[in-house]
Image 1 (cartoon, rainbow, N blue to C red):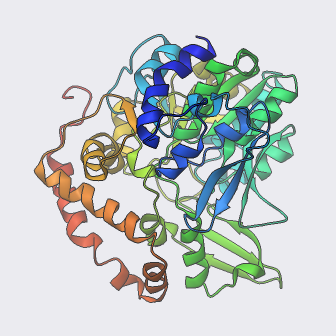
Image 2: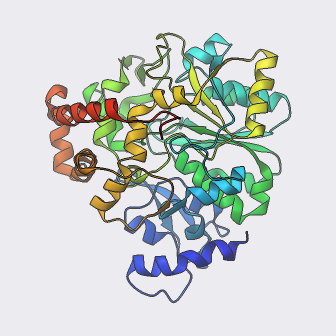
Length: 456
């Protein structure tokens, strides 16, 4: 499929979205103006003129594209490849796997596993088992790839992420661990285009969507990206969540030398190292309210929890009686290439895998699959959004609208500076009062939800 074929179906949509007829090709600015930017960085990475940069918006607490009009030629490729205003999960699934999503909840798959890296330090210091790091190191050692697009926290600005191309095992391992903040991963597309070689990409579902769109548009990119490793994702908290975290720990942002959002075993602790040498630790990130309080509108409009377009997807093995400790991941091998790479890595002894079934993947993510696949239509109606999503979704009932309303309301409220100030001062128990009735309702719904393979 060529660039013009990608672009043409969207031109009319953009004119409607911007409420006026454009006399030139569309750009990405309209997407951001309507709150549909994912901050994935695809537009900046693919721009042939380097006219777009991703900058942190203080008003949004996230990355937004900034267009240099003196360099922009209005070619429209930024809008055409943007996954923010439109996601055709069915078409991308056909392009990737040759078929529609096999499973309504988790997409196409060939095998499922539970596993971990066999190197204890790699396993212990990762978010959940170190499999992604181990697989990348194996692919690098075997010449499958020359580099991997991964993300580390910036040494110069330790609270800001830095996507980069890792070309050594040391770089890959040093970049391991979750980054619970906005990350413009796909800005590194430009590095892949500038440097010959074979590459792996590690990303969240939205970032993989953008990468797939870019690969369709650019043959060179499609030829160079050989492997897609996807991370399960409920949502990516805005930078305001990190600020609240630091406030709760009594830390001034200017004093932070390094932050590790997860590590030190599973399910992991958040560690903040200060410039004067001391360390602050939040033992259980999952009890921290900031993650749910500071969610962007576009994250709430996502249809993909398990990175359905990746060759292999990785997530936390919640609800599977996995003991706390060094850590493991639930794994979905989607492509033949991905499954073969996992099996080859296991044969070398770098990873340990045991077979799982699709229902275990669903059980591990049950709550969020309900939120993504059943509540999405309700959230779209509540927002009245113009985002175009072509994916199999489950129709909500009346009580689902209640469950959908609360995060939409909280997300909107979090855009208010006064509301953020109040949230930073309220006791945590009081701050989380609003979640209790909805959690009870959701739990009752989950107990009745027929989600298994044989009943969907």
